Length: 110
Length: 113
Image (cartoon, rainbow over all chains, first blue to last red; front, top):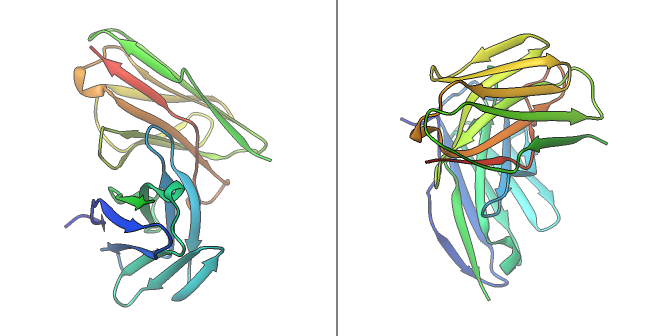
């Protein structure tokens, strides 16, 4: 079992819709969780982090964490074509570095 | 504010040639530093991390090595490149003492022919 699992996609949504990206992790001791956005050919950039169960909102982005289910999600409201990218979920298992999923490719159709 | 630089941005090298990629961080002291590799269409593979000058931990045994000669400088090297070394090499930093939020440099795209 991979430590951090994401559906590779592509996830296709129409402009203005809500995009829902999901991630599961295997290490129950993980304490912090991150979402990075990576445009094609570019390096990952941090979008959000979440430490506690529940929702955390930042503009059009909402991160959701459920530690009991070992599940993290990212919701993007009012999706724009500029949101088209690969979204990487990362988990801090309390060891040396973050563990990254392989990413979900999001396509927002104009 | 903190900034992270990597160079070169792109590199094309023949098989068997040496490699040296450099990463520097500005605006913070004693950061944790990381080297990742991303193969085409794949996730991030942690190669090395460092918590201080001269302190390097290797995550994946291979023909690559890393060094940290100065507090904010991290170098990735190879004596002889393999075809499988092609990929997107990313340097990242996090605050001293924390393995938490990591910030990435612009990356180096390496093609080995």
